[in-house]
Image 1 (cartoon, rainbow, N blue to C red):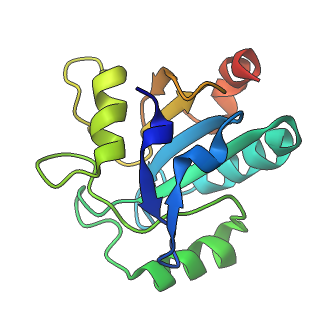
Image 2: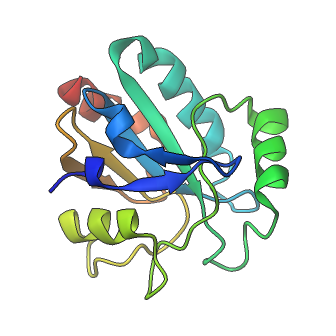
Length: 157
């Protein structure tokens, strides 16, 4: 099994197969617009710009499961990300990442790379690094800044 078996709606509501990213390394992140870690959008965009020509893509998945930190609509989230952080990497529609209603992609990601104590995602900006074969190779805590994972990204390029 790989991430290529999943699909998700983009932030504009279009269904997108993750198989479209075959042959690319990915950083999949659950994001939020009103979180202490929200400035990480800037670092994620920098990673995307730095490595996109080497078949690397950041995928952002807004989530409102943690302290109501992304209550806006998909349009509001998209506008916020573009205006405040110049986000150009692909953003998807808001999802749940934990619980019964968790998006199947996040159920898969958390089953492949568990956290320190539990497989559940503890907060916004948890990051999953996926290699070019669609395999989850690393999981990073919310407090791990995007710029601190460049050596891990280099290994999967």
